Picture 1 (cartoon, chains in turn purple, green):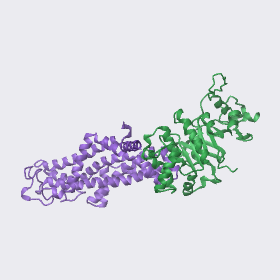
Picture 2 (cartoon, chains in turn green, yellow; picture 1 turned 60 degrees about the horizontal axis):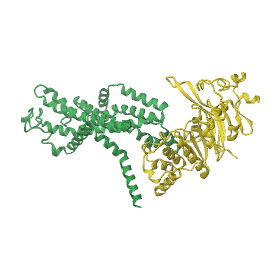
Picture 3 (cartoon, one colour; picture 1 turned 90 degrees about the vertical axis):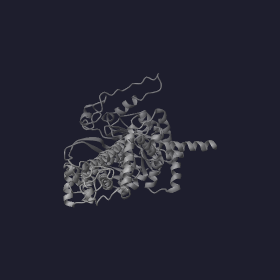
Picture 4 (cartoon, chains in turn yellow, cyan; picture 1 turned 135 degrees about the vertical axis):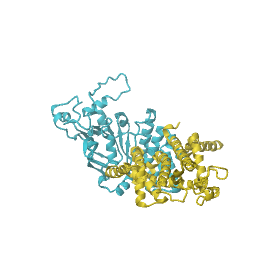
Length: 296
Length: 323
């Protein structure tokens, strides 16, 4: 009896070891760059969440007498042309950049996944129509297309999110379609049909879980693209409107002082670079950790 | 007795090349006019070389593929007329065991979830009842209850195939199509799985369509055997009849290649020359005439009729007509 109990415990332990989530975490935690990025991004998220408590100054109302100061003890990253503390503005800017990045990817990913899996699963005319439409969208430079959508939708952060998610969506649709095309040939998908599943159940239970790896990876990489495009739209004056703090807008308004106060563009630029890099490195790490071919 | 499955003039052509606007340029005639019956409780073996259309036939009978032409009657009902909802209901009665136990189980689902899925889909059991039923099914195929929590990649090929069998049993179907269920397994495991299938048939009275590429595996399990060549059925007869007195030259060539475990027996082997012609462009007349050792003038011109040469023994060959 005791032996039996021991045996059950052992099998339970084995089951624990083989849990795919654990296996995934074990592999991801081996990748130092990805872990550093993950810690950085978690830190950034906390900073963004608690911005009002962390930021030393008001990001919107500056002190005119202290304008265009170089970094010093009072203002660690200096001040801008209106005397606003740059560190505070970067901290508040993180809120917008992260939110826009995550939101735009979430929208683009879900719409793209649905369209891509319908095109890939059903094929034929439906596939032809959906994918040619995606190709048309991909044939325009994405920023140009985003600007065109902004022109229709009007300025503002919400519209920037919508514009960015529309222009990045075709890429997700293509990736999902390609993966669905290869996964749906597997016999387990035929088995799922043979046991009487509906198409929706086959797509969501049997196909999509097996194409998640490339989607997740592309999603993390997509966050950085979305942040960059928000910055670009902000730089062009279409995204976030002054006086709200956003990294791209800060770059845009700081460029006039590039020669006498370069810190106005350095620091928001560094913030964008670091965040984008962190998302890219994390994406690479996720790709490696999720690739079953690398499983030992 | 009314047959459980009636297959009539079944055809499936695949488009291999399409022009830019989807107009077919070349078609593979994977299944080209196949007719046969499957009687309740029997095992019908279906053999042929790879690419002869036997797996396609199996998938057409389950309507996993849509046919180009022809009918399949299941319990007297033409399944190709059934609506999507009716078809889902019919699937409860017909199941399939796949060839590749590595590809036929979803790697992201536990064995328990895989076996429980058909029961969930048809609302046959829920909660504790479902768990109990899954354990019963697993023990039916020789697996233990705790295996339900594991993932397919933790099992060997033979064990995985048992999981596939348990899934096919779950809804207690009438017809099970076994699509080369042992050809991906080690020889030592093959007979285990074959015996399991036989035992289950005895216990539950399943009807099998057993697809295989070797006559020896099929002999072990079948009551009747059909031989396919290039998308067509060339011979169909009872087990003993087919192995004892084959009529079609192709069947005779196949049988002469089955090894006999006795070195003293001198067998006359019939060696077929040439390759199987492409199903994109099959030969005129009898499809086998390019490789047949009894080929006559008429074989090149006119395809032979599939007819009952002796009671219960069907064959498609001009040479047999002359006998």
